[in-house]
Amino acid sequence: MKEFIKYVFATVVGLGLFLLISGIIFFVSIIGMAASEGATTSVKKGSVLRINLAGSLEERAGEENPLMMLMGDQMASLGLDQLLEAVDEAATNDKVEGIYLEVSSTFMGGSPAMMQELRQALLKYKESGKWIYAYGDIYSQGAYYLASTADKIVVNPHGIVDWHGLGGAPMFYTEAMKKLGVKMQVFKVGTFKSAVEPYILTEMSEANRLQTEAYLGSIWNQMCDEIGKNRQLSNDQLNSLADSLTALQPTELLIESGLVDTLAYIDGFKEMLRTKLGLKEKKPINFVSPADLVAAIDKKDEKARVAVYYAYGEIVDQAVTNPLSAGGTFIETMPTIRELQKLRKDENVKAVVIRVNSPGGSAFASEQIWHEIQLLKAEKPVVISMGGMAASGGYYISCGANKIIAEPTTLTGSIGIFGMIPEGRELLQDKLGLRFDVVKTNKHSDFGASSVMGILARGFDESESALMQAEIERGYDLFTSRVAEGRGISQDSVDVIGQGRVWTGEQAIKIGLVDQLGNLEDAIAEAAKLAELDKYSTDSYPAPSNFMDQLFNQKQESYFDTHMRAALGEFYPMVSTMQWMLQPQRIDQCIYARVPFDLKIW
Image (cartoon, rainbow, N blue to C red):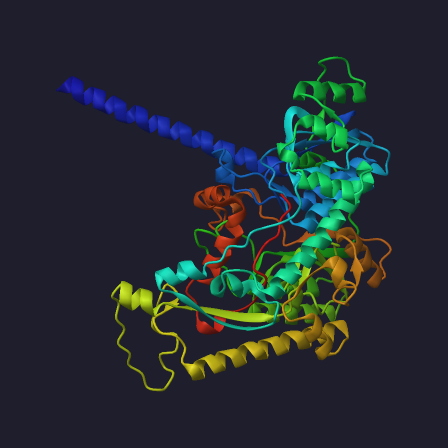
């Protein structure tokens, strides 16, 4: 018995020591990663900037979840802000010889405007006389769009270039909801306001099809023009290749058509790089990452500043974490207002660029943020830089700025309002057997009261429907009045180009919704010009979270969300949006200014 107790005791002590040592190692790892955040990096002479095109292209870098990184289960993402800064630095840094675009099969692309902005930066970099080489086993359409800037495009002898054109297949839930016993009560203003269509139709309306074909055609033509200029291919040739479905064609066709320059395995490609760099066989190449190159920049620090405030994601009154939005980004009313107030009161901030990348969201939240931007504009110049999307609520918060600058492929406009409230009497009462007994003091005391998970047990009566529609129309009237005031045109003119219609930046400049086509750099230059600044530095806001803040921030991307993104792929944004819209909330919060999708070039 004594021997048994001795062994048990030894086992417990051993386990305790193991857990203690493991905890110390984990803690030291955390401290080490936190300390490395602010470490400066030196760049060796003869380096090559390696841009690994993997994961998704996001607006800003530094959103990784530290715990997921430690467990090796973090989906890769690329911060556009960091990539732009690294590419700009590579052009002038005499230690950087060239850029290597390392194309991964996991590259999920980004919005057309974000991809276009990165492509423009690569082309500007080439003006320095330096080179770009691209290599990949599988080039998605978005990866090829970026790689077409390269001096040499190399693909694996058994690889793929997927060039097929732009398209999509919207999902409609109407019949599925009918089988469940749920129907959507919809109230809207705007012939083209299509966000409600998946819940009430089984196919696209003619108006929605018209606008979708128009903006897809605009984006596709721009892509063909840009790629054709670099690869010496006509639009007819590129369209013919798209129709041939190059992903299923032999790789020899890629050479013959001029899409790529040569075929090689990765070891052969590395030899090409060594030859380009003048290195001896098997001598290692000095690769530097975008993060390390940015960390090595000796930045100027002028007292006068142009602030760049990033507003991207759904516009919400208050962010609510749920399984399908744990990793999402939001433009939340009060945090946004507080940040803008700080910029307004900061005497060193002479002008503000607001980088908007949003499909919209809450109409009420959009109005509150619009108001705060007007207070900011009254004291210092405000310039909007539109990213991938600044539509509906995203355009609402933008329309009152001193100047609006958009990428040619930015999706904007969508000036319209809608409300959606699910009614599920058949599901709740007939199928589930739930009963609600109402007690009330007034005619509408039970308005929206009987519900389960945001699904009403009874539909609106005629008078309630009329009141709801009137509220939506007042919201549209307010929206169009804000646009009319900001753009200096009549409200009737806004209504003509409004009605919920989505426009590309290329189209929007012709109808007066934006002032100039350009990127974030152009917006910063314009803000400095309006503020009459000769010397200035730029700062980004909100300040990125440090390592420890990210570690303990419960709103960071969850394990479940990470794998749902991977499993659902292109359907993830659609399902996430539906889940977000149908979460329980007050009836007056079910009024939206939003587009129904997030377009990406894969």
